[in-house]
Length: 113
Length: 123
Image (cartoon, rainbow over all chains, first blue to last red; front, side, top):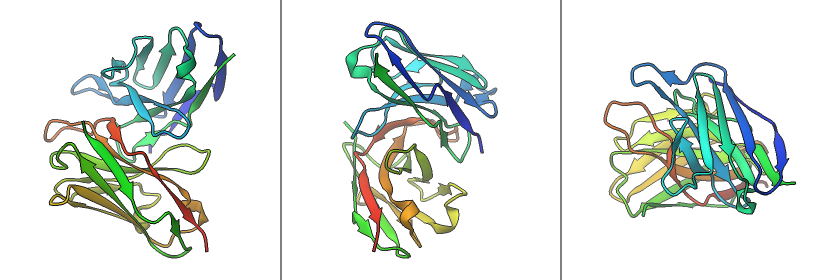
């Protein structure tokens, strides 16, 4: 199984400031045949299902604000919220879909400072 | 707009079988992979398994001995059965769609999720 870890477990950021979440996979999720990283980021607000923000590690889902961006390759990835808004308070999960079993990181809780 | 809706009992007794159905509307169940994911209260996400519209399946090894998924294309539904449940199976259960991928290619991320159904295992 590919184990996903995230850091930090939680963070509090002032409105308008940058939030950075890290995700690491226990093995590479880069598929050499198409040079794509099989890594997605989801946002989950209380009482709601997860919502995809980023896939292929850096492709923003349609309708997702451009303050959300993803980067990284291989085993190390980052989700950045460039200017935190009140509506961004949520838990963020990374997920690998490179191989089964599909696995998720433990989540990072983002709050307002 | 594709919508997914989970249905089934919210309370299951220990040792019995949990049975859930996901109804897909606004799109065809054909040509996609469909997953079940669960989330214990206050905890993270666990993939249970997927079913392809052809009926092909793949399960999490941690649950494989107890899980069965199936698809009914005539009803645009897919289902989950989890046997011999215990309190550890208490969770929010979500159904989700894998984004469409070209035939023969690898899985993709989840682009649509149901709202989830809370299943409690208790006598």
